[in-house]
Image 1 (cartoon, one colour):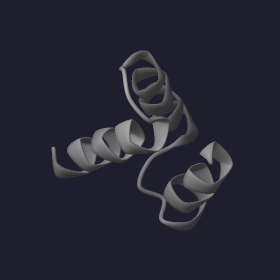
Image 2 (cartoon, rainbow, N blue to C red):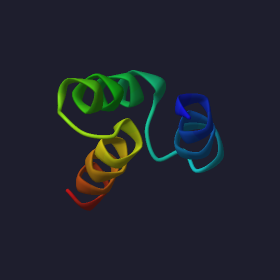
Image 3 (cartoon, rainbow, N blue to C red):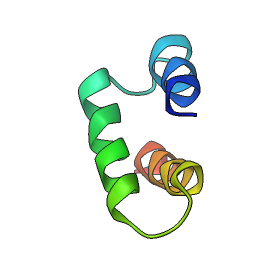
Length: 49
């Protein structure tokens, strides 16, 4: 799941760099719940701000 999200967000759309993507991944792993859901919330929040 993580490589698919990374290829879409970092490689195809260039929304974030690899370092920022790793930060999002670390936050998503540290919060309770499904990883993909937590990542989508973090990505959406950072995209909006």
